[in-house]
Image 1 (cartoon, rainbow, N blue to C red):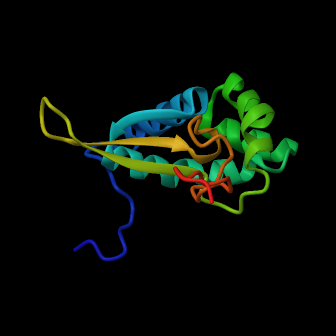
Image 2 (tube, helix red, strand yellow):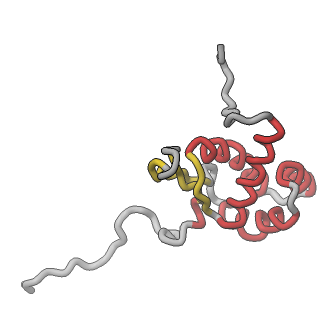
Image 3 (cartoon, helix red, strand yellow):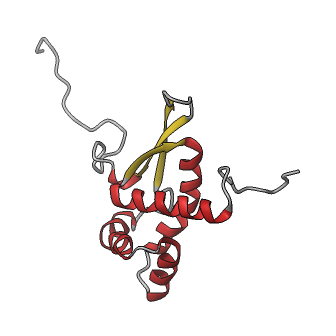
Length: 140
């Protein structure tokens, strides 16, 4: 029985899963959006959201905790220099997972995971309509 077993093992042992999530997190920090399978994207979201919350407070302890998870100095610098200032006002939900459909080769469900504040198409605008003038063919 799997009562209360919330972790998705992704078909890997613990060390392999830890390395996989670390590498996915590093890629997400570096590129701001990556394409992977849906299961890996959902597991990555649970892995990286607490790290991004920690990155909002710049203390030596938080830097060491983040380094213990990521093991990459450049990623820590990127977190504190560009990502943390952008997510400072956001209370949570730093990532977005979008389903892309099945992969051509094996039919695995693919997804795009991205940092919400770094979407170049939204660029800080809300999804609602912007206020503007409406034009008509005939003038009154």
